[in-house]
Amino acid sequence: MKRGQFSSRLAFILAASGSAVGLGNIWGFPSKAAENGGGAFLLMYLFLAFLLAYPALMAELTLGRHGRSNMVSTLDSITSGLVQKRLGQLTGIMGVITATMILCFYSIIAGWMMAHTLASITQTLKMEKIAEWLVTFSLWRNICFSTAFISLTLLVISAGVEKGIEIWSKRLMPCLLLLLLGLIVYVLLQPGAEEGLKIFLVPDFTQLADPQLILSALGQAFFSLSLGVGTMLIYGSYIRSDENLPVAGALVTVSDTGVAVLAGMLIIPALFAAQHLGADIYTETGRLISGPDLIFHALPALFEGMGEAGALVAIAFFTLMSIAALTSSISMLEVPVSWAIETQKISRLKASIAVGVFSILISGIISYKFTSIFELVVVATTEWAQPILSLMLCLFCGWLMHRNHLLDELKQGVPDLESGLFWRIWPTYVKIFCPLLIVIILVQSFLPFS
View 1 (cartoon, rainbow, N blue to C red):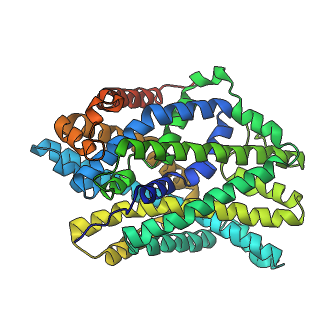
View 2: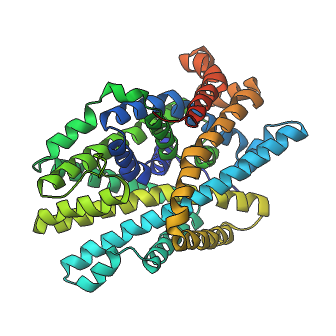
View 3: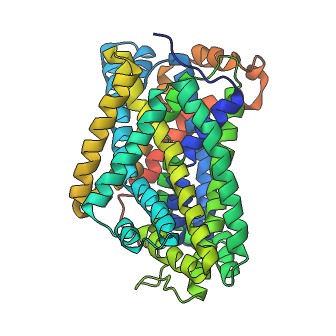
């Protein structure tokens, strides 16, 4: 069966950036920044994104292009000996499971965004009862919209790499950026927004030693760059052999962190603009609100206070959130779908439907037991599984993939790579420093926070 391939560097950058630029940036990053001191979190996030996430991203892209297969088969192919092969298979399977579980909880949040988009539209049409149902948290609303969202993702994935992932990435990413920039300009012109911008951009350096802030920033860097679950490994397997991987990886990292900063410049100033209109933006402990309360309570208060223009801003905002969710979910679904296609020898359509139905069922269970398992699934996958899996991928790339094979793979797109700065630093860095730093931060998370 012929594998798909991105037609150009731009196609890959848009697809990979779309994977990275999701709710993890537009919602997750500003929420965690609000929880963890604004500017201090931003500084730590940017530091970890380039210190750890970029080298780890390069490990995934290199493994992916070398293996030209799904995560399980790729890790199996670079190992020798029974123990190494079993470890590679186990790591790959855990990546597939983690990607699927992230998609399952992610679809619930994305469903909220879709519901609020429709609610904003129905409110402008004076359909108040429908709008009220759309914005009210309920089991059936969550199930309906998470199902709709996964089905939408399934339609894109079932069309393949060139006709599905690539085409829709080229359509959705420009729309996302235009909406984001337009909303930033509008919100920054609102009274009170300047104070929020200052909190977001000016760090309190005393907070940088907070272990919780460091762990949260690490989890955010890995989650927003889609690391550790095989999405970038799979996208790497679709990259042309003559592509310059270090440059492509750097562009994805820059675009991801850039959108995260832009999202912060939208969300946190919007919080203070909402406060100016009378909304309560602080918790009982004195911290800025975050998570669902931020998106679904504080910001709607801002939109309502804007008068007639607020309805259009609300539609634009929740459309932005829905698009961001879709660009990421496409890559998540591709991880188990590629595994099913290549190991079970079934068509892409059948694999997409099978994985999609399974994801809908798991998402429904999470919705049914929302209060008891939702947060558990989020923390287990994004703060633990992703960094641990990324640690394993760094070890596979640095220790188990032969150095000459690593060099030959990268030289396909950069013939003079061996004489450059990247090759002098990155192999040792991904072999020793990346795993060591990830382990230190993860171990530190077990220690009691002061």
